[in-house]
Length: 355
Ligand SMILES: [Ca+2]
Image: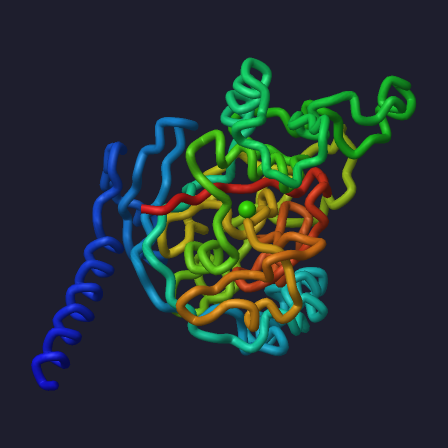
């Protein structure tokens, strides 16, 4: 009997060791580069190991196997208590920072521990220049190899705003009044936006990657200390691209906002706002599709060791907020949800992959 127990113990111990080794094995077939991402002394990175993924010429940050607390326990913003310094802050800033409604999201609670295996995630949102390579491949070979099984037939992967999406813009009188035009969203270094979930899925598969899970995205964005934003828990202007005083400005708008951009900024514009794992723009700029379906009680669909959304649904989760959101709505824990075919000028994605 004792011999049997010893054998079982040895088998279990071997399995645990194998799991540990697998979770820490170096990625194969990709060059590994280590670089110093500590651009801000106040926001040191936890694990500054990057992989260069040649398929789509991207840099991916390696996230080690970790446990962290997903979600939030906060009910109201306590920012005003820290920021109400007479003469030093404008009422509009208080309003922006407070964002009461954004802090009332029941679907972020309860905060709960989850444990993830190691993975890699794009350092930046997928850019237009990267997405053009995907479109070229689709043009040459079709998308059968990369399309999701539920993708609508006849799907066109061209981003919404790359096309002549509004015939009225041809009218010079109307065009002058438009908030933006196609050129606003086609820059090589800005994130691709106006793509739906099927576009994001197919791009990731083409690149030999996948969309991150909701739990992976949140860990990459905030690390293990439950911080509100990628850089910490105190709001600061200029660390990410969010909404500002030029909301709704037309294409002729002059001057700059506090964060410098009305619409998407080039990825990596805010190095001091990086996440603890060295990921850029996880607050604001483009909001990001993740792989999971949305459920208000998503935390009940998986387990601590295998967090995931429901098997089916009508909307996918979107994380991180965008250039048009308030500070409260670009927090690491905030959850938004959209139908798979939804496209808008604030919504893009980044990819992940197993190690
Ligand atoms: Ca983002």
